[in-house]
Length: 189
Image 1 (cartoon, rainbow, N blue to C red):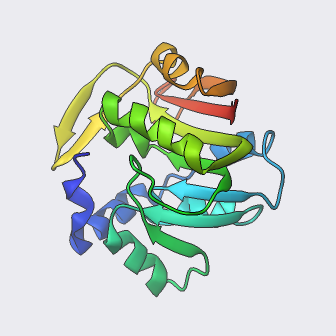
Image 2: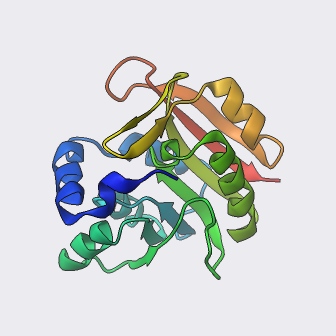
């Protein structure tokens, strides 16, 4: 996992400024069709905490990030949620959850790392648990500012997730441009 950019306080603060216009409200709305209120959710890549706050309105959410700097900023903001340093590939945690959520986080993984993450997500999801992940749509992959970015197609996401999850929702949506993003919601088989 190439994720160096977010490993300084300055870069975490810079990302928070850039991302302040974006949130996962639409994604979380779709998630609500498949996940009961009060369920436990693990958010991968909490970053600025925007989606953490929205998710917490309906769910018991544990936030996580690979960067301690994001977590420190959330602690300073007096966020009450449990916050963990967590690698989105290995997911070394003793808890289990009703749902695992990420918004454009798993895009930082190579294809092989994503496949490992999917398998490890199964281990910490309760029976019938839900995954809700968004991705950039396309076929590009590149490194920028020490961080890897990997775009995906609907077909490859379906191929990778469907052996382990019954796909409930897999569609394009617009974040910056028409159909530039994909939302996947699946239920553990």
